[in-house]
Image (cartoon, rainbow, N blue to C red; front, top):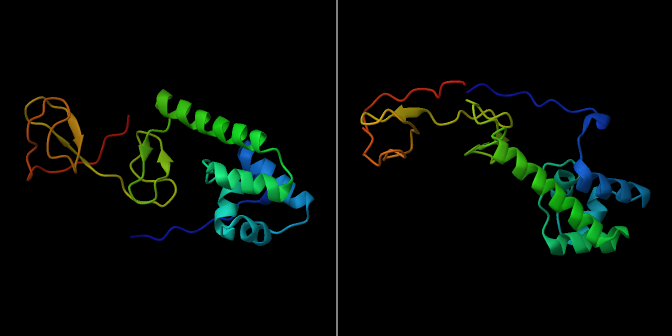
Length: 162
């Protein structure tokens, strides 16, 4: 498997989202490092980094309250920012733009993706049902359309791009 080169984003290119932006700005205003804040709230630095850069969008309420106390923020504002980020992600999933979660890393990808845009893992190939012609993901043993058993020895094909 080919290795993917990690490309570091420019500081200003990071889309922090509302929640990450609030936490990042407050932390910087207080002159604190990610490590210092993470220790105070009982988390590790990479977790806080992922929250600040928008990689983690759902932060448990106890962590939000700890962040609010540590950084002198309004917990209700942080909760609203978190919930807003979740509703935006939910809307994208409903519209079909981001429906496919990677089995390896959990990253959301477009529903027509063949490879994960985060880790490069290949998505499962598909198999066509002999009875009804529906395309099913390869781990499936039964057709999601008609319920018939899928042939175990049929050739698996890459999911066609739409």
